[in-house]
Image 1: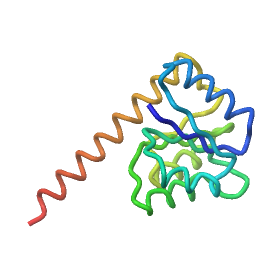
Image 2: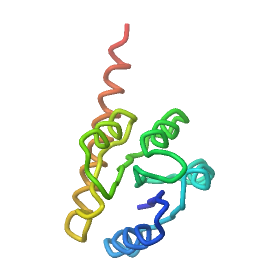
Image 3: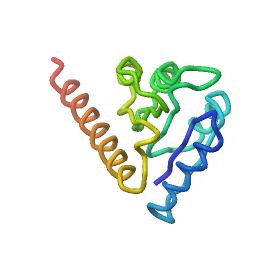
Length: 137
C-alpha cells in the first residue's frame, strides 16, 4: 500500500512511518511537513490512504481534507490529533475525512484496525454514491 502522512511534527511522522513499514515491507510511506508541500505529492501519486494531523501549523485538518476532496480525490483519509475534542472529530468527518484517531492510540495492534476500518468506510461510501447515481431518473 502507498501512504502519505501530512504532519508538522517530524517525530510524529517518524513514529507513524515506522509503524506503517512494520506492517509490511512493501508499504511505501511518503511524508510532508505541511499541506503546501503535500499538494504536488497528492496530485502526482496514487495514495491508498492519507493521514492528516488535524492541527497543522498552516491549516486545520478539516480545511486540508476539504481542499483534497474538492480537487476530486476520494482515497480514505484519517485525521489524527494529539488531543481529543468531540468537535475535532466532528469537523474531521464533516469535511470529508473517512475517520479520526488519537495519535496516542495508534500502535502496532490498532493501526491495522484503523486502516481496515477506513478502507471499508471508503468502499461503502463509494458504493452508496454509485447506487444513488444509478437510481437517478
